[in-house]
Image (tube, rainbow, N blue to C red; front, side):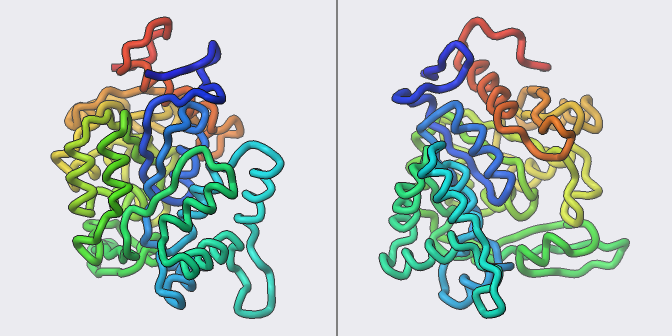
Length: 334
């Protein structure tokens, strides 16, 4: 059962539905900042394929999981107090030096240091969560770092590229994406969270490097397909240069179905200002078993960023629609 106040937001001391949000980077951060208004039973499952910047350097030099996306997820869940917000800012601060530390995020160094001290990635993340007073838990999608490989088509010229940072900027269209290793281990805590969830939320984010990879891990794929949880997909607000600049809104859903034809959705959340063809999106969503929820979820300045409160309201309507609560005004398009 969802415990909400009159305005629709979860109150301190109340829990809300059990939700697992999957993704990485800024997309997952947007989802987490919205979901924290709805529930305190929240688990973020984060991609671990980043190989660029500070994360890539620590990954290579220390042979650890890339901490950057995990750090961003933790920062998004910080306690809304002077303590929590201060430590969030510390975690997100990047060093500016003339030496080897230039460009490193302090949070990345803290997480990597804890991993070295504890030799347990999840225990280290839990400790950082306690430091931030995080409203939820952050877990890596795999116990080992992942490599993303993609086949590209650039105006008829086909080639392959390896590495998340390279796939994101490679010219042309992604025709196929895969992971190495092909069967990475999934932490038991991730599998338990999915099996016990009321809702699983996927997206928004970089489609081929943050969203689809969760469905390419066999154990994680099976858990997402067989869970009793409802499943929601949050669509992007803009095409991403390099990865999806030739894809329509409906194409995003079709690509997801291409990689996971046995993965069913209950609801697809889309912003009408970012939807190319509603009929095409309706058809693509219906093929995955989903209804469409059209809501204005972008920030008021028109930038392609999700507004946490607007996205929270959309997710709340989605959850209410399936839990059968009364008193809501017709939230569904379909």
